[in-house]
Image 1 (spheres, rainbow, N blue to C red):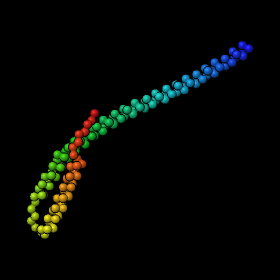
Image 2: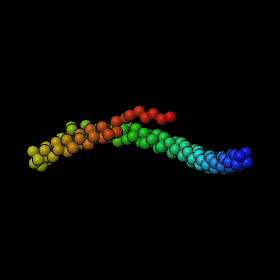
Image 3: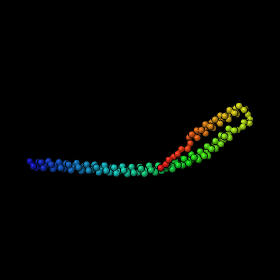
Image 4: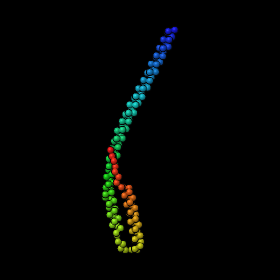
Length: 127
């Protein structure tokens, strides 16, 4: 009978409308979540760029300190080492003094080599 068919199709229409409304609500909720995540991502990007700038400045400062150390401290140590290698032994047990001086010079050479290896200049590239 046509009335039962109409009722059945009307019921299906209403159910379809409800399903559509639920899907629209879900879609709206997902869009809101996406907008919120975009906001957080934008904040994170801004924060990371600021931190990158801070680290770039810190790296420049450290590079200048390394260059200063190389030009002053290491040069001074090299000068001291050269002066000590030519030092004369004037008194005391000659063999003991020579041995101590050789040990001292050997230690200085190791420290100097380690320092030069650690602080050798490298090129820092910043954006």
